[in-house]
Structure formats: C-alpha cells, structure tokens
Image (cartoon, rainbow, N blue to C red):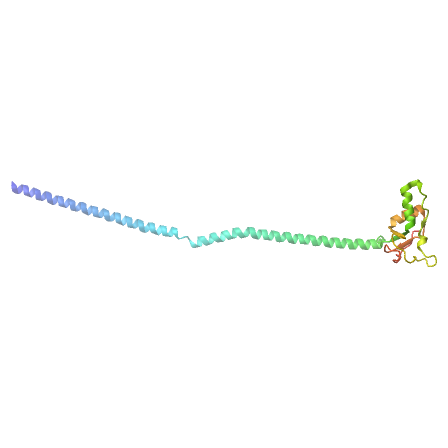
Amino acid sequence: MIEGTEEREALTLTLTLTLDRRKEEREAVVAADKEREVMNHHEHGGSSQTLCDKPNTLTLTLILILILILILIPILTLTLTLTLTLTHTLTLILTLILTLILTLTLNGKAMIKAGRLREIVWFIIDANWLRSWKAFIAQGSEEDPPGPIANARLLDPKTGKAFASLVSQKHYRCLGELAWLALFRAYGGGPEIRRVKPDIYSPTPRGRCHS
C-alpha cells in the first residue's frame, strides 16, 4: 500500500515538472517571438524614419527651380513691358519732333513763297504830335485836333535823314504797323519813317511805303 502511494506521488511530481518545463519553454518561445517582433519593428521603423527624415535631393532641387521660375517670370515680364513702353514713348516723341520740324519747314517755305513772312518794321512818329493826340483823345472836344502827323520835324530837309542827337521817348516814339496805319489814315501827314529796329538811326527796311 505504501509502495503504491509513493509511486503515485513520484508520477505526479514527474508530470508536474514536465508541465512546468513545457510552460517555461512556451513562455521562452513567446518571449523570443516578442523580442524578435520588437527588434523587427525598430529596424523597419528606424529605416522608414531615416528615409522620411532625409529629403529627396532631386525633389528639393526641382521645387527650388520652380520657385525661381515663378519669381523670375513676373520680373522678366515687367522688365520687358517697361522696355517696350520706353521704346514706344521715345519713338513717339521722335516722330512728333520730326513731324513738327517738317511742318515748320514746309510752312516756312510756303510763307516765304507767299510773301507772308516779313521782317518786323517799326514806324517812327513825332513825340510832340503823339502827346497832342493823346491829350485830344483824353479831353475830347475841349482840345484841338492834333492835325496831320508832323514827322518832318525829325528829318533834315536837305538830306532826308534824321537829325542828330534825337532821343527816343523825348523826340520820337516807335509804333507797330497797325497803330501807324490807323493814325496815318485818320490824320494824314508824314512822311513815313520806317526802321528795322525801334531806333530812328537804324537801317530802313526793304519794301514799299504806305504814304
């Protein structure tokens, strides 16, 4: 009876040890599998992270080139536009200048041919007579009319030339053609004294007299 009990206890102990050994083996296999999974995860994850952390050099270069193109296109367009505008403006200005020169040249030639381009002529009038006329105009009927223009007092009757030492404003005045013609047609007299400058001693211009 005792021997049977001891055999059962030995068998139970052996079975228990076997089960514990298998459990430990299974746990070791599971632990090894987990360790391999962790290591594989770290290896693949590390590689992916490395690939992600390192930017693609070709892609970065293409992006930089695209950015430069996008920046340079407006600049080049603006520069080209300004250049064309400036060229167009300069061309227009030169065209206008040439047109003006051509027009003035043609008009000048036409005026010379038509006899409309004449030198300026000054008409000398006796200062005393002109003062009398101004007083007559200012006072109306209270003053006597000035009578005919008395330019003869300015000229030497022997030579027909102006007396020496005549002073402008004091002895004579200079009028434009229209003013002279108005006074001459209204009062007559004379003689007509024409000069190329507002000076009685300047040369006489070419052309006929009105008197």
